[in-house]
Length: 299
Image (cartoon, rainbow, N blue to C red; front, side, top):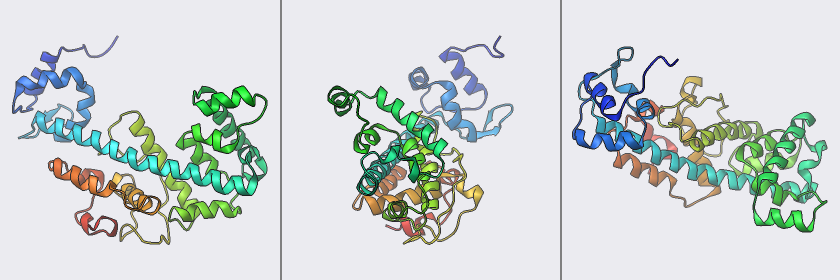
Protein backbone atom coordinates (compact mmCIF):
# COMPACT_ATOMS: atom_id res chain seq x y z
CA UNK A 1 0.00 0.00 0.00
CA UNK A 2 1.28 3.48 -0.89
CA UNK A 3 2.53 5.65 1.98
CA UNK A 4 0.67 8.74 0.76
CA UNK A 5 -2.85 9.20 -0.52
CA UNK A 6 -3.48 10.96 -3.85
CA UNK A 7 -4.72 14.55 -3.69
CA UNK A 8 -7.07 16.55 -5.87
CA UNK A 9 -5.76 19.70 -7.56
CA UNK A 10 -7.59 21.81 -4.95
CA UNK A 11 -5.91 19.82 -2.17
CA UNK A 12 -2.53 20.24 -3.85
CA UNK A 13 -2.97 24.02 -3.93
CA UNK A 14 -4.08 24.11 -0.31
CA UNK A 15 -1.00 22.10 0.68
CA UNK A 16 1.28 24.56 -1.12
CA UNK A 17 -0.43 27.48 0.62
CA UNK A 18 -0.02 25.78 4.01
CA UNK A 19 3.69 25.38 3.31
CA UNK A 20 4.14 29.04 2.45
CA UNK A 21 3.85 29.15 -1.33
CA UNK A 22 2.51 32.48 -2.61
CA UNK A 23 0.33 33.01 -5.69
CA UNK A 24 0.09 36.18 -7.74
CA UNK A 25 -3.17 34.79 -9.13
CA UNK A 26 -4.30 31.59 -7.44
CA UNK A 27 -7.18 31.19 -9.91
CA UNK A 28 -4.67 30.28 -12.63
CA UNK A 29 -3.00 27.55 -10.58
CA UNK A 30 -5.52 24.74 -11.32
CA UNK A 31 -4.86 25.09 -15.05
CA UNK A 32 -1.15 24.42 -14.59
CA UNK A 33 -1.59 21.58 -12.10
CA UNK A 34 -4.08 19.85 -14.40
CA UNK A 35 -1.52 19.87 -17.23
CA UNK A 36 1.82 19.64 -15.38
CA UNK A 37 1.88 17.19 -12.51
CA UNK A 38 2.52 18.36 -8.95
CA UNK A 39 5.40 15.91 -8.63
CA UNK A 40 7.02 17.16 -11.84
CA UNK A 41 6.82 20.79 -10.67
CA UNK A 42 8.28 19.75 -7.33
CA UNK A 43 11.70 19.57 -8.97
CA UNK A 44 11.45 23.26 -9.81
CA UNK A 45 10.36 24.51 -6.39
CA UNK A 46 12.72 22.24 -4.46
CA UNK A 47 15.39 24.95 -4.15
CA UNK A 48 12.78 27.43 -2.88
CA UNK A 49 12.33 25.49 0.34
CA UNK A 50 13.88 26.69 3.59
CA UNK A 51 13.10 23.33 5.19
CA UNK A 52 13.29 20.40 2.78
CA UNK A 53 12.03 17.93 5.40
CA UNK A 54 8.93 19.84 6.45
CA UNK A 55 8.71 21.30 2.94
CA UNK A 56 8.43 24.90 4.10
CA UNK A 57 9.03 27.60 1.49
CA UNK A 58 11.29 30.62 1.71
CA UNK A 59 9.58 34.03 1.97
CA UNK A 60 8.48 35.44 -1.41
CA UNK A 61 8.34 32.03 -3.08
CA UNK A 62 5.79 32.44 -5.87
CA UNK A 63 4.07 29.70 -7.82
CA UNK A 64 4.38 31.83 -10.95
CA UNK A 65 8.18 31.77 -10.58
CA UNK A 66 8.00 27.97 -10.52
CA UNK A 67 6.09 28.02 -13.80
CA UNK A 68 8.62 30.44 -15.31
CA UNK A 69 11.44 28.15 -14.26
CA UNK A 70 9.62 25.17 -15.75
CA UNK A 71 9.14 27.02 -19.04
CA UNK A 72 12.77 28.13 -19.07
CA UNK A 73 13.85 24.52 -18.66
CA UNK A 74 11.54 23.40 -21.46
CA UNK A 75 13.06 25.95 -23.85
CA UNK A 76 16.57 25.07 -22.64
CA UNK A 77 15.97 21.42 -23.51
CA UNK A 78 14.79 22.42 -26.99
CA UNK A 79 17.88 24.56 -27.46
CA UNK A 80 20.20 21.77 -26.34
CA UNK A 81 18.33 19.31 -28.55
CA UNK A 82 18.99 21.59 -31.53
CA UNK A 83 22.70 21.70 -30.69
CA UNK A 84 23.03 17.96 -30.06
CA UNK A 85 21.13 17.14 -33.25
CA UNK A 86 23.79 19.03 -35.23
CA UNK A 87 26.53 17.07 -33.48
CA UNK A 88 24.75 13.77 -34.11
CA UNK A 89 24.18 14.48 -37.82
CA UNK A 90 27.80 15.62 -38.28
CA UNK A 91 29.17 12.57 -36.43
CA UNK A 92 27.06 10.22 -38.54
CA UNK A 93 28.18 11.98 -41.73
CA UNK A 94 31.88 11.89 -40.86
CA UNK A 95 31.84 8.27 -39.74
CA UNK A 96 30.16 7.20 -42.96
CA UNK A 97 32.33 9.37 -45.21
CA UNK A 98 35.79 8.69 -43.83
CA UNK A 99 35.39 5.00 -43.00
CA UNK A 100 33.38 3.99 -46.06
CA UNK A 101 36.02 5.46 -48.34
CA UNK A 102 38.91 3.78 -46.52
CA UNK A 103 37.35 0.54 -45.24
CA UNK A 104 34.38 -0.07 -47.50
CA UNK A 105 30.61 0.29 -47.40
CA UNK A 106 30.25 -2.41 -44.72
CA UNK A 107 33.00 -1.14 -42.41
CA UNK A 108 30.78 -1.43 -39.34
CA UNK A 109 30.74 -5.21 -39.85
CA UNK A 110 34.53 -5.45 -40.11
CA UNK A 111 35.62 -6.38 -36.59
CA UNK A 112 39.30 -6.02 -37.55
CA UNK A 113 39.03 -2.24 -37.26
CA UNK A 114 37.55 -2.32 -33.76
CA UNK A 115 39.33 -2.70 -30.43
CA UNK A 116 36.83 -4.91 -28.62
CA UNK A 117 35.19 -7.45 -30.92
CA UNK A 118 32.57 -8.53 -28.36
CA UNK A 119 31.48 -4.94 -27.76
CA UNK A 120 31.35 -4.36 -31.49
CA UNK A 121 29.14 -7.40 -31.98
CA UNK A 122 26.80 -6.06 -29.29
CA UNK A 123 26.77 -2.67 -31.06
CA UNK A 124 26.04 -4.34 -34.41
CA UNK A 125 23.24 -6.41 -32.84
CA UNK A 126 21.70 -3.23 -31.46
CA UNK A 127 22.15 -1.48 -34.79
CA UNK A 128 20.38 -4.32 -36.60
CA UNK A 129 17.49 -4.07 -34.14
CA UNK A 130 17.23 -0.35 -34.90
CA UNK A 131 17.19 -1.12 -38.62
CA UNK A 132 14.50 -3.76 -38.08
CA UNK A 133 12.29 -1.17 -36.35
CA UNK A 134 12.83 1.44 -39.05
CA UNK A 135 10.07 2.31 -41.52
CA UNK A 136 12.27 4.65 -43.56
CA UNK A 137 11.59 4.28 -47.29
CA UNK A 138 15.22 3.54 -48.17
CA UNK A 139 15.25 0.73 -45.57
CA UNK A 140 11.99 -0.69 -46.89
CA UNK A 141 13.28 -0.61 -50.48
CA UNK A 142 16.56 -2.28 -49.48
CA UNK A 143 14.63 -5.14 -47.87
CA UNK A 144 12.54 -5.45 -51.03
CA UNK A 145 15.23 -5.27 -53.70
CA UNK A 146 18.37 -6.42 -51.83
CA UNK A 147 16.86 -8.93 -49.46
CA UNK A 148 19.98 -10.99 -48.81
CA UNK A 149 22.48 -8.12 -48.79
CA UNK A 150 23.76 -6.25 -45.74
CA UNK A 151 22.88 -2.58 -45.45
CA UNK A 152 25.60 -0.20 -46.58
CA UNK A 153 26.86 2.08 -43.82
CA UNK A 154 25.12 5.15 -45.26
CA UNK A 155 21.81 3.33 -44.85
CA UNK A 156 22.50 1.49 -41.59
CA UNK A 157 23.95 4.41 -39.64
CA UNK A 158 21.30 6.82 -40.86
CA UNK A 159 18.68 5.15 -38.65
CA UNK A 160 20.79 4.58 -35.56
CA UNK A 161 20.96 6.63 -32.36
CA UNK A 162 23.62 8.98 -31.04
CA UNK A 163 24.40 6.43 -28.32
CA UNK A 164 25.15 3.73 -30.89
CA UNK A 165 27.21 6.13 -33.02
CA UNK A 166 29.18 7.11 -29.92
CA UNK A 167 29.91 3.47 -29.06
CA UNK A 168 30.90 2.74 -32.65
CA UNK A 169 33.36 5.64 -32.65
CA UNK A 170 34.82 4.85 -29.23
CA UNK A 171 35.52 1.23 -30.17
CA UNK A 172 37.41 2.07 -33.38
CA UNK A 173 41.07 1.09 -33.24
CA UNK A 174 43.04 3.99 -31.82
CA UNK A 175 45.62 3.69 -34.61
CA UNK A 176 43.08 4.38 -37.33
CA UNK A 177 43.87 7.78 -38.84
CA UNK A 178 40.15 8.24 -39.53
CA UNK A 179 39.42 8.23 -35.81
CA UNK A 180 41.77 11.16 -35.17
CA UNK A 181 40.58 12.90 -38.34
CA UNK A 182 36.97 12.88 -37.15
CA UNK A 183 37.93 14.25 -33.72
CA UNK A 184 39.94 17.03 -35.34
CA UNK A 185 37.03 18.01 -37.55
CA UNK A 186 35.04 18.62 -34.36
CA UNK A 187 37.87 20.73 -32.91
CA UNK A 188 39.40 18.06 -30.64
CA UNK A 189 43.07 17.07 -30.75
CA UNK A 190 42.43 13.81 -28.89
CA UNK A 191 40.00 11.10 -30.00
CA UNK A 192 39.83 10.00 -26.35
CA UNK A 193 38.64 13.46 -25.28
CA UNK A 194 36.16 13.58 -28.15
CA UNK A 195 34.77 10.16 -27.30
CA UNK A 196 34.31 11.24 -23.68
CA UNK A 197 32.48 14.36 -24.86
CA UNK A 198 30.18 12.22 -27.01
CA UNK A 199 29.32 10.02 -24.03
CA UNK A 200 28.41 13.06 -21.90
CA UNK A 201 26.41 14.55 -24.77
CA UNK A 202 24.50 11.28 -25.14
CA UNK A 203 23.54 11.42 -21.45
CA UNK A 204 22.14 14.93 -21.94
CA UNK A 205 20.38 13.79 -25.12
CA UNK A 206 18.67 11.04 -23.11
CA UNK A 207 17.62 13.51 -20.40
CA UNK A 208 16.02 15.65 -23.09
CA UNK A 209 14.37 12.65 -24.78
CA UNK A 210 12.65 11.74 -21.51
CA UNK A 211 11.61 15.38 -20.90
CA UNK A 212 13.49 15.34 -17.60
CA UNK A 213 14.66 18.44 -15.76
CA UNK A 214 17.88 19.86 -17.21
CA UNK A 215 18.59 23.29 -15.72
CA UNK A 216 19.85 22.17 -12.28
CA UNK A 217 20.32 18.48 -12.99
CA UNK A 218 23.70 16.78 -12.70
CA UNK A 219 25.69 15.43 -15.64
CA UNK A 220 25.87 11.86 -14.43
CA UNK A 221 28.84 10.70 -16.52
CA UNK A 222 32.36 11.75 -15.50
CA UNK A 223 33.67 13.02 -18.79
CA UNK A 224 37.21 14.22 -19.49
CA UNK A 225 37.96 17.88 -19.94
CA UNK A 226 39.76 18.07 -23.31
CA UNK A 227 43.35 19.24 -23.60
CA UNK A 228 44.92 21.45 -26.26
CA UNK A 229 41.74 22.60 -27.93
CA UNK A 230 42.11 24.97 -30.89
CA UNK A 231 40.40 27.72 -28.91
CA UNK A 232 39.62 27.08 -25.25
CA UNK A 233 35.94 27.86 -24.63
CA UNK A 234 36.62 28.74 -20.98
CA UNK A 235 39.77 29.98 -19.27
CA UNK A 236 39.94 27.31 -16.56
CA UNK A 237 39.88 23.54 -16.29
CA UNK A 238 36.68 22.65 -14.43
CA UNK A 239 37.12 20.12 -11.66
CA UNK A 240 34.96 17.02 -11.33
CA UNK A 241 32.32 18.78 -9.22
CA UNK A 242 32.11 21.66 -11.69
CA UNK A 243 31.78 19.23 -14.61
CA UNK A 244 28.78 17.69 -12.87
CA UNK A 245 26.89 20.88 -13.70
CA UNK A 246 25.71 21.97 -17.13
CA UNK A 247 27.90 25.05 -17.74
CA UNK A 248 31.18 23.37 -18.78
CA UNK A 249 29.46 20.88 -21.08
CA UNK A 250 27.24 23.60 -22.53
CA UNK A 251 30.33 25.71 -23.21
CA UNK A 252 32.06 22.77 -24.89
CA UNK A 253 28.93 22.06 -26.93
CA UNK A 254 28.78 25.66 -28.19
CA UNK A 255 32.50 25.45 -29.03
CA UNK A 256 31.87 22.32 -31.10
CA UNK A 257 28.81 23.73 -32.83
CA UNK A 258 30.70 26.85 -33.92
CA UNK A 259 33.21 24.58 -35.70
CA UNK A 260 30.77 22.23 -37.46
CA UNK A 261 27.97 24.76 -37.96
CA UNK A 262 29.44 28.27 -38.31
CA UNK A 263 26.90 31.06 -38.35
CA UNK A 264 24.51 29.16 -36.08
CA UNK A 265 22.28 31.04 -33.63
CA UNK A 266 22.53 28.70 -30.62
CA UNK A 267 24.42 31.18 -28.43
CA UNK A 268 22.19 34.08 -29.42
CA UNK A 269 19.09 32.04 -28.61
CA UNK A 270 20.52 31.16 -25.21
CA UNK A 271 21.13 34.83 -24.35
CA UNK A 272 17.58 35.62 -25.50
CA UNK A 273 16.25 32.84 -23.31
CA UNK A 274 18.00 34.24 -20.23
CA UNK A 275 16.65 37.68 -21.03
CA UNK A 276 13.13 36.26 -21.26
CA UNK A 277 13.47 34.50 -17.88
CA UNK A 278 15.67 36.78 -15.72
CA UNK A 279 14.60 35.06 -12.49
CA UNK A 280 16.54 31.89 -13.34
CA UNK A 281 19.43 31.31 -10.89
CA UNK A 282 22.10 30.34 -13.42
CA UNK A 283 24.59 29.43 -10.67
CA UNK A 284 22.47 26.31 -10.13
CA UNK A 285 23.64 25.24 -13.59
CA UNK A 286 27.25 25.80 -12.59
CA UNK A 287 27.61 29.22 -14.23
CA UNK A 288 30.43 31.17 -12.54
CA UNK A 289 29.94 34.84 -11.70
CA UNK A 290 32.15 35.89 -14.62
CA UNK A 291 30.67 33.48 -17.17
CA UNK A 292 29.92 36.23 -19.71
CA UNK A 293 33.64 37.05 -19.92
CA UNK A 294 34.57 33.45 -20.77
CA UNK A 295 35.87 33.23 -24.37
CA UNK A 296 33.01 31.21 -25.85
CA UNK A 297 30.38 33.48 -24.29
CA UNK A 298 31.79 36.89 -25.24
CA UNK A 299 29.35 38.54 -27.62
